[in-house]
Image (cartoon, rainbow, N blue to C red; front, side):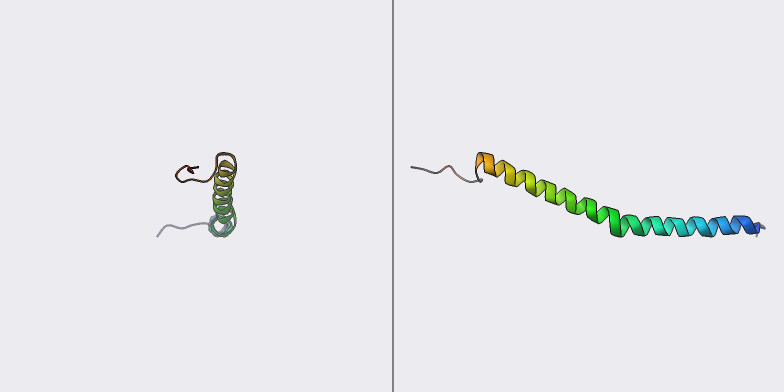
Length: 62
């Protein structure tokens, strides 16, 4: 096994810790907010479209 200097080992530990922290922030912070925002914006678009053009279904017969 090759010799790894002490400062490089510390850099690897800090790098790995940073990656884990970045993963946790993305997995449990950023992506859920983006997912909820996407679904909410789609629902708002459908709601607004139906306010203007009416609900889906066959046309009413008078």
